Image 1 (tube, rainbow, N blue to C red):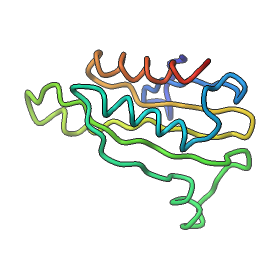
Image 2 (spheres, rainbow, N blue to C red):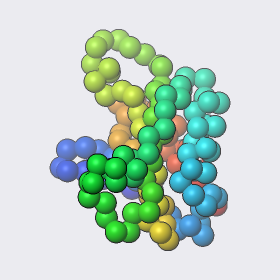
Image 3 (cartoon, helix red, strand yellow):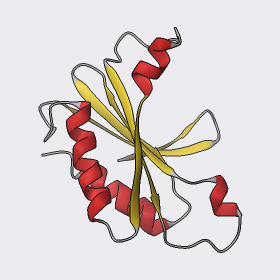
Length: 128
């Protein structure tokens, strides 16, 4: 799992792995697994899936040639709401992108370390 900064301000976690290394053969299959993890977690709640690829294509947006599919699972951890501030950074999203020969799974760092560790473990478990 690599930590990096996207656009010089957004901290993200990213895991790249080949399709041979993957337990799953498609973006929807990965999202099905992640949704199972969310549903089984006592503090997480599934919100939706978002087909980023189709959304961008339907708006004649730019899509890199090597991107074959890109979707997100949207969820939220209901651990605490001590002030209005957490509302600005929720819900969470895990993105799954198919680059043809590999998958890229990434998410923005969560302010709650337990939520962040949980998502990191879910993502790492996608690899054989």
